Image (cartoon, rainbow, N blue to C red; front, side, top):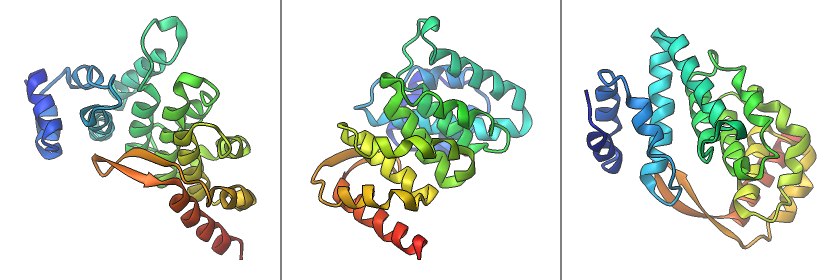
Length: 216
């Protein structure tokens, strides 16, 4: 049975192999990890979110009902009446669907449906982008509205919208992507278990190349 401090140590050291191992004998691992997902400026927050998905994916093989219960609790966090801070709920759900897409395919459109909630929007779009990398068919319901987010004031929103457009191969939005090639904004993202800063113009340029090739 791992302690909270041991889990934090694994996350700080980026030791996912050890974390996955100790998760097998820690009944409250999800409770511990969720408690670490409230500070988006801390890389431990993001590694905890990623770990939730990985561990849920493993557990779903033997106990899908148990993981389904976890999903329902996180969905409850996203609803105002729960009284909880829903800040990282969409990201957690996205990682669970990404790691067990067949079992939780029904959750993907539910995540999409929260896109117009301002406090959840970044997380929802990130979750959609993550799922679309593995199973784009599960999030196709975002197609009619994602173009609006390519023109959003928030650079993080524009970034994730670009990734979604790229992965869903939405060639009808090529002109929107072209308009962002001149966007000099930079955005800090979590990728490959660490933070990095990316140029929106570079992401837009890469997306435009893919969409042009797809449209030929």
